[in-house]
Length: 382
Ligand code: GDP
Ligand code: MN
Image 1 (cartoon, protein in one colour):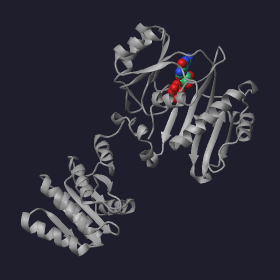
Image 2 (cartoon, helix red, strand yellow):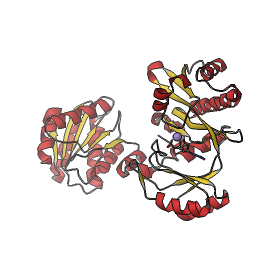
Image 3 (cartoon, rainbow, N blue to C red):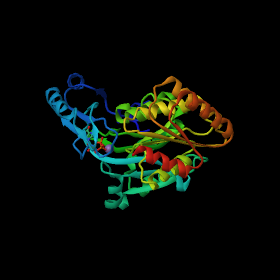
Image 4 (spheres, rainbow, N blue to C red):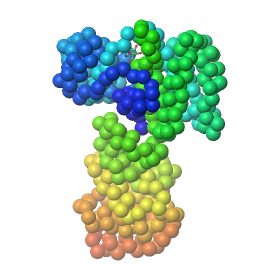
């Protein structure tokens, strides 16, 4: 999960990293009021979850509250690199003397966190690396040993960091690392880290990406997720705890396990069909989860048929069958379902379904194999 700049800055600030004064606004009126409070000379920063906002016209400098209001009117509703601007962070303008870069990223291949420092900043890190290779340096931190002062010192020397900044930058790097560890982040970054004309060092931008798989341990951050930036259906699925990704086909897919889901989608493509989504109900899913999965998929208007492909291991086929029955009993479902049940308790599962189909006359097609299922689903979707 990627946090907005204003959210990341809040956290950075709580950990001792200096930031400029600012407030987030959702209306032109708010922008004017905040700009007045900050004395008029402000920066308007579009809060969209994408990099390079500056170049794309998402960052505006203003000299008065009136000008801020005018600029806000242009910015709200504007689309920056595919993201709609609905929040603007209004910050006190900094008189920038120097721009630098500091950040950590998770590097799986090196099994650690790579600290990158550059004594130039403000542009993409790739651009810095290409244009100023002598002003950028990095070191990988082993999370077992943690970050050592000598590592920071080596990197600062190698990046050509002026000696007078060492103390402040070091403190900021240590704060970034503690944020990274505390929140189980994949990325923490300040670009640019600026030195103002009066000699203060301030984080002018902030990025913090949290590992989605660790989010359940950080409930306070989960609340920060900006759902205006997430597909509506994916949002509902996320709230139900489902692993769902919306796609643009018309065959709803439910499978257990990511590999199984992918294989099911592949087979649908092979048969000439197109999956409407990826949905992995995981191992050991309860009948309640199965019901939620079906109801989520049915919210997608494009879905003409659902293909449920279950290979029971810890997931029990009778539990899945009960979920299906529950879904059909609680909801009005007219979408046909192709069902393949194999593995643990498959016989019990099939019996539950057959009994239910006989009683209700509902369209559930039980198939033996994945291939057969994919063929049937594609046929029904036509
Ligand atoms: P990004 O383009 O999405 O990375 O957004 P940034 O927050 O990094 O802003 C882009 C650029 O705008 C920075 O590199 C600065 O050059 C400029 N900028 C941001 N804040 C200020 C500020 O307070 N004063 C001035 N003069 N420039 C700023
Ligand atoms: Mn930036």
